[in-house]
Image 1: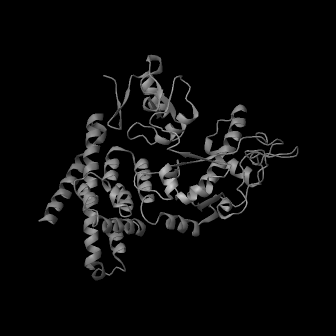
Image 2: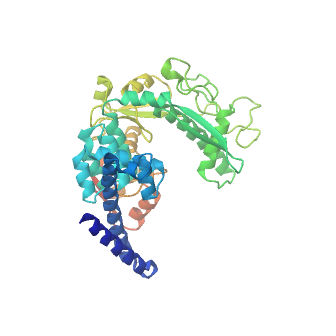
Image 3: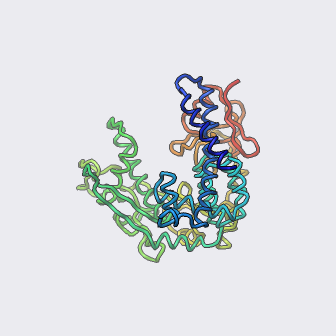
Length: 431
């Protein structure tokens, strides 16, 4: 019965697609079709997972001559072995997550959303419904962040951190064009230090380049910064005046009682050259401010030594870290810790238009991406007064939001409206 129904559905879809001429559709009709096809895709993905689970448990794959259920799924679906393994893992986890499976059967969740939710809820079952709700209201990058937070509140977070550390690596190879490529695996705190160092150095290189008329994209300056740091052109004075070590110092050594990590900055001395462009002068000056890695941790978790559901200990933009790691890093001069009990971000306010540091930090933490639903832009966000400052809007956390340039433009100049309804942002066109 089920198979014959699906066969008819597939036949009907073939007919629909054979008749579809998208160029002749009105825009609104194309949008409606996209929504309908997306629902069909979600439902089909759920059915595929449930069937794959039974294929694995029944051992029918052996009779088909496959070496594993994953190989059977990969061949049937036309995907690689990796995606097939991920699908089977998700399918097995759904058996223990009835609420998630029900939402999947209803067509509410995509396969990728199911993977993210099942991975986290299998560690922290109490977060299951919260993650389902987040999947239906927020973009994928925020769902992933919530899932990482949920996993951090579950058992074994410290062990998972140590597993990452034990399997850390840096690989490089030369591609067919002759370019050198890199791939690395680092703990979140070590990775954040590297990224912060590169970004700080890149900002100085980019500033000089823009003044010279360069129109190259930001990513090229990130590459130049990596070279500058590796060749000693990225030294600076650390907070407090001491000269930082040259780049190349083990970025995790401070967690093991060794030397502190390199302070990102610029070259020193009259003979220093820019490693990025080869010029006679290094970019910046030796007194440039060091890069700072921010950590947000709930006070109760910091005191307790572990995170419980609903609490946070993480590096914004990177992800959760064990509280023990935050404690070890707390005295490092290039790390800033925001203890949320120390600044009550629900009541931070300021009477002027200028946004003070504590309020700005709280806003960045609350809005890691543009708040407009569906927008995932996380770079170069602009702070907006939801109720305009000129109309009496206060400079408070509740009246501020971070928007990408495009959505800020729509709100400011095209009469779009931004509001928050029961904790969910709503962005409405004029009219």
